[in-house]
Amino acid sequence: MTLASMTGFTRRGGEVGPFRWNWEIKSVNNKGLEVRTKIPGFLDGFDIDVKKKISTALNRGSVFLNLQVDRSADNERFVVNESRLADLVEIAARYSDQPGVVPASVDGLMAIKGVVDLVSEEPAEDELASLKAALLTDLKLLIADLAAARRDEGRRMEVFLAKQLENMHDLLAAAKIAVGDRGVAMRERFTAQIRKLEQSDKPVSDERLAQEIAVMAVKADIQEEFDRLESHFDEAASLLAEKKPVGRRLDFLCQEFNRETNTLCSKSGDAQLTKIGVDLKVLIDQFREQVQNIE
Image (cartoon, rainbow, N blue to C red; front, top):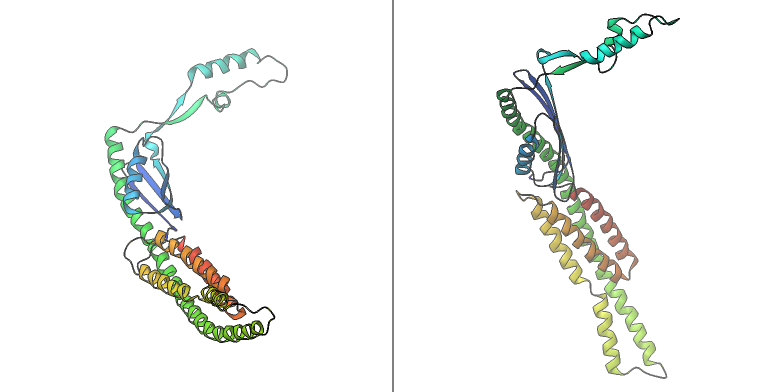
């Protein structure tokens, strides 16, 4: 069991000094590796380190990472915009003698947007360095958790894919049996057609007859398709046991599965063999749908 899915999700949290954080990371399938991050602005440039760590651990997938960092309230304070408050006091005094106007209160004026703001002090350099170091340590565990989730999903997918390959082998065996029956029927039809030609007023020359027989034999022969499918199925089974990413190679093999099966159906000339070919195409589509989620 060595496959890894490109689908996974995990989260972690931690704290150091006045900071507390929460990570969330998820991944879905993609042709290559694409990493998108959402990181607080005061951690300028930290996203570069994050992307490097992820790209070292993962090979494929669209990865979305979100980091939230909160700081303790000890570093927050209220700041009053004195000039704006003074302007408001002056305006309130100007209209205080108007009928129906209630005298303005200081707390009412301070509730106006922009008069009072809650601000946080910029973290010191040593605090930022300590935070980044702690985050990078925690990031390793986060990525390991995501990789484990992808491997767990991969194990489930591997069981399904192995079963699908087994079913494909069974259908191929049934197709070979059907071809044996079809061969007898084709010979009988061909013999009947030859007899009709022999009774014709314009008989066909032996040379032309030999050419037609050769053409029919080539068109009817699907042993090559059987051999290729057998080889492709065996290669796919070997890839499932590989200890490295095989998603792209399996996806390519699925294209070959389809190509050979289409040729088999086009050459069948037999209802039973065509039905087997259609059933095989259904299995291949199901197989490829899962393969496209493999790293």
